[in-house]
Image (cartoon, rainbow over all chains, first blue to last red; front, side):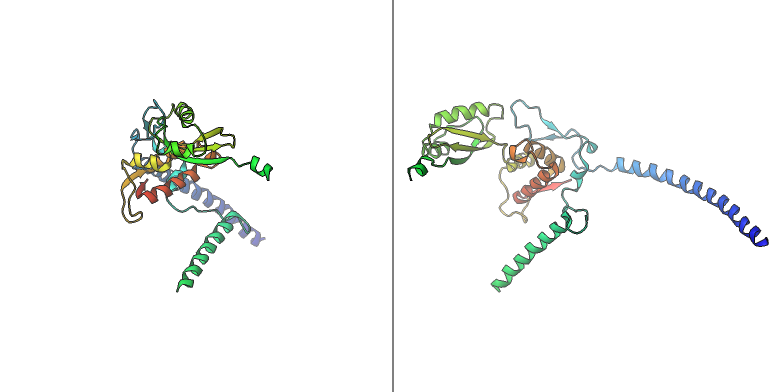
Length: 118
Length: 148
């Protein structure tokens, strides 16, 4: 009986404690989110500002000069085009594995060709 | 034997012609004349077809000459290097790609060039990201740096 009472007491306290901790966490998150979005808007993704004239791209007759648009009007993949493409791992027999194997094979052939000249 | 001779293959000629300015003798004349095509006919048709393109833009054309001397041709968008050189403001690519750099181009330029190239028949099915990566590769060979 006393054992049961001991079990009851901490449960009640635990629930109360949990409620307090969740509200504290949500209060902490909100100002962080606001700060992050403000930072993203401030630092531009591109060196090419909006409405710069892109010369030579109006190759049709009578086409008006092509202007650069704002950064967020371009697709997300454009900003990663300069880095080598990262393939998500889709298990054995997937595209990522094939790409990796092809690169390894090509390198192996090049090494073999080089060693045959030595 | 006679059947094989009758089915003589259609010949293909690949030329880079400035849009709207066909009919100079050196490049176009002999290449077509050797296959029995009247160059004046071709030039009139070509100039009519490229009338909507800015004059002087190099236009790759694929001319198929049938055994009976009739011809058909396909025009494609100007080479990527042409656009890159214009965008970077340079006349020629560098003599030492990878070591000597000529000009700079932004990722937004690359995107717009990719949009133009994707209108081509042989590029229509490709994702725009792949075309953009091809253009970045061309820029590397030209000595043009691509900056975000």
